[in-house]
Length: 130
Image (cartoon, rainbow, N blue to C red; front, side, top):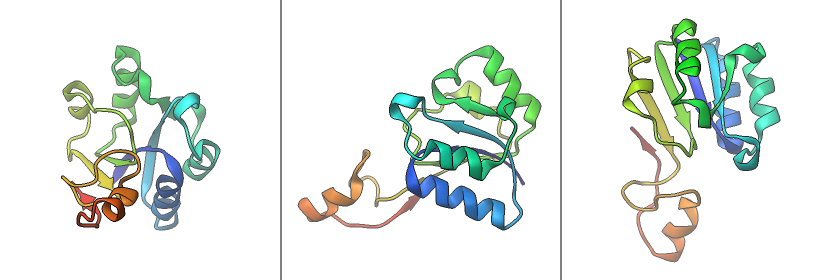
């Protein structure tokens, strides 16, 4: 499948590497802006894409960015530790939808540091794929 990858942090980097290693076609990359970015250089290197195929998350509501993503013809989105809400106009660009990986058992342990809360609050631990 033609994958549009949306990610941030170490886990996103490792999943993106794994996609590439298995021959999946990553057609575009959406990353956090520099002030919120973690492992950005590694994500960009793992994606091995031309700069025209790399987008900042804050631009996902801009018509020019949506048009550029549409031209990449992605089939599915994969979101890993992506800290932005994906709007309907963006999601319409992905015929197979978008899959999100969250490193906690939802609805417990939401947010950026979910692993800590399962220990502190004694709530269930796990991974959510939705």
